[in-house]
Length: 253
Length: 253
Picture (tube, chains in turn brown, orange):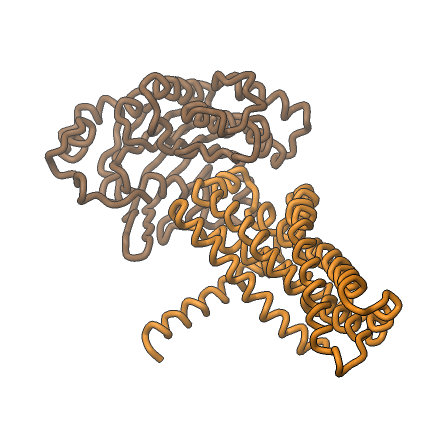
């Protein structure tokens, strides 16, 4: 299980996280929603040690991430797949080489690497794309390669950073199916998104991040029935209400 | 001290400390041979072999100008065979290493900073870390080592071609024979002239590559941020070459 305990994080004078606490139960997809700049991506990066929180801690399978040395952190990252918002594929490498890189690091032999590469591309529906370069792929295909790169490592957890942002509705639905399928394979998912349709589709639990802290956590049904005005406004996508609108929101971090 | 000057000095002090910290981390990353060793040869080819054409171009014209310039200075005052002495000494000890270093600061430093800067702003560096790679071992060490190893090789080419161009110029455009040119070349020659130039160029290579890596990995924002980092990398690389040039002259001459 992943547990966030009172995470705080500032960038200069801007306090992005002000005490985020959340538990991510095993075998489920937990979705963090919140407007742009609310600190969703920062939260994910704290989990894998890409960012160091100013206070609080992240506990993964009983171990505190902030107390890990380099080797322990590398081992942790072998258990956590990360799907980046814009896929973050290595553009000088082919699709197969992108997937292979993480497997080489884990010490798999060539035969195992070939099998896992083929399997993971099959899972995301991109079999036969091994020799293509990221520049030859659409945005949706790149994100699916990003998922394949994470799935190939057979991680225990996958963190998805805005997996459907910028995609057309059909490709978004494909991404949703992939996240559900991955969960059904036993992988715990933590998805950050502001796409409510996607969040309600893939999520078992929804948590709303607002003003640097978790505003509400609950099942999809609980969130859909919420009376909290902030959460209500966000999931309904209404411009009027307590949430900051254009011009008053923070920049994305 | 005015506030502007004070802030510039503080920023420079901060950067020097940053370079020190990163240099220490890079030195530690040398132990991770499994990561950087497979990348070394590719970087040596890219940073060294691919830089030979520009180096040859510079060396040819440096040799020609030196030969003509020394003839202009010596005519009527000093025996003309001293042209060989001046061309040899200057190319081997100073102009070969420094001009090659400057040219490669532009080519290699800019290339490294732009590549790593783009990787940084597109989250490829973060992706690398989530695949359990250490950024220092994977990105910095192979580039810095390749530059340290290949700058002297490229400089040796430059020395040979510069002296050769000076000789051809002297024989064809000046009233000087080959034996006379060689007499001058041998007159003050010491083996130290060559290794002094090569040791300097190795240090130039390390500095140029390190500045490129550090500035690239510090890139922020988008294309503009990468552009600024690239410019700074080239400027800092050139400054480092001049400082190191003076350092080696003080130490070894």
